[in-house]
Amino acid sequence: MKNIYLVGFMGSGKSTVGKLLSEKTGMEFVDIDQLIEKQEKRKISEIFEKEGEGYFRQKEKEMLEKISNKEGLIISTGGGLGADAENMKKMKQSGIVIWLDASIETILKRTEGDTERPLLKQPYQQLKKLYENRKKIYKMADVHINVDSKSPEEIVQEIMEKWKYIQV
Ligand SMILES: Nc1ncnc2c1ncn2[C@@H]1O[C@H](COP(=O)(O)OP(=O)(O)O)[C@@H](O)[C@H]1O
Ligand SMILES: O=C(O)C1=C[C@@H](OP(=O)(O)O)[C@@H](O)[C@H](O)C1
Ligand SMILES: [Mg+2]
Image (tube, rainbow, N blue to C red; front, side):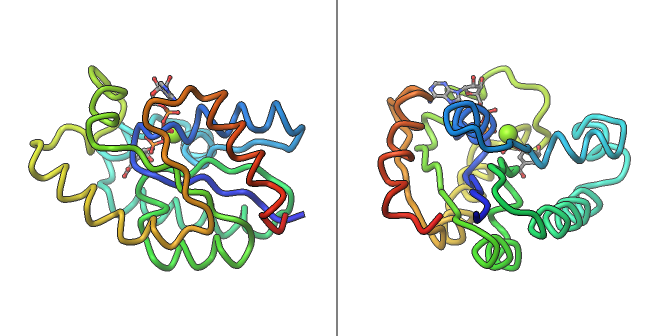
């Protein structure tokens, strides 16, 4: 069975939906951010602060390399991983990529007060630009789900309805 990768901007619900989808399907769940934190024995915010973003992006690539050799996993990615064309290619080769597409308004609402995501600290105009640029890569996903005004349960339901059209 192929892997299922969830991609999308920060706060689109990848970690929440991935875990729930795993509970509903019985497929094993991994969150790449959690795997990196476990491996590095420190929080992502600390990795960014001490080593810089480039180091974290490298760790993401290495983790994706390991994970893409496995099968039948539900994988929640970090928002930056799925916005890299090389990573997108690797994911599509080893599984089905599902884009959780949230509006910038939804993103801001869901991440309000967050202190764990370093890239949310930038001014709104810069964040919006990042959001628009990343969409160009997210669009390459195999499945597109609009997640605005939907509960995690409804999103999982929608993914499972599309399941039969997905070559799992
Ligand atoms: N469909 C949803 N509706 C409302 N809140 C959500 C939904 N999905 C996730 N959330 C909330 O939004 C925040 C970000 O979700 P998370 O799963 O961590 O997103 P991501 O992994 O894409 O950054 C969390 O507080 C989570 O509880
Ligand atoms: O968009 C990004 O560049 C990032 C998203 C985060 O994951 P979530 O998308 O799960 O918030 C985490 O990987 C890190 O803070 C960087
Ligand atoms: Mg996440």
